[in-house]
Length: 191
Image (tube, rainbow, N blue to C red; front, top):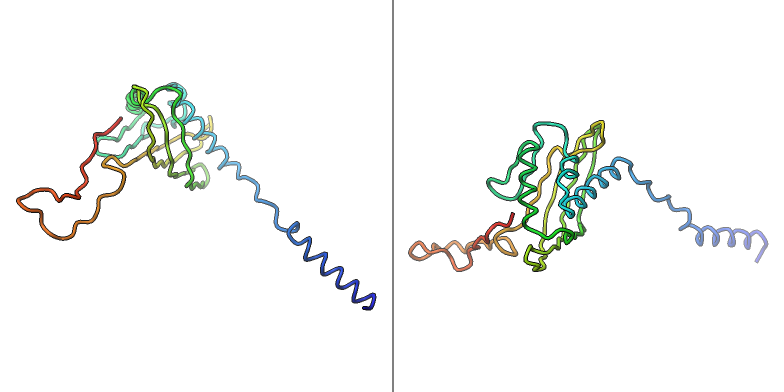
């Protein structure tokens, strides 16, 4: 093998072996996305501590702020109504027991508006100490104010009628006006 061929082979081999180190640097975290994550984390920590003052400080200074739940009647508009809703939520779980992981999440921002959506696996303890696990979907719109990012709307939902969506009906009418055997029976709502 000639010296030129060895040099070409060595250069090619060096390029192939070091190519992975030439890969693009990981994208730097987007500052706005990181700021929105901090607000969501602050919300979750305040909720877990049942710290109403800290929760309410995370909502925009706007009379149109809204908190939305799963079903009819679960729409709270304005800070006073949202505050009352959180007071009711506090009766449903023991302080310090709320845990979550959100394996599916999406977020973005444009100017002074940001949004997020996540599917979360939740754990907590009921007031009687019973451990619970449930799925919760959350979405929010935040706006940038002088104090930082604040929730304009916050939405949460979970299944209340069982563990899965109702099955499709087979097209056959129920006998004598009875519900089909596979019809979902809604569970009582927990607030």
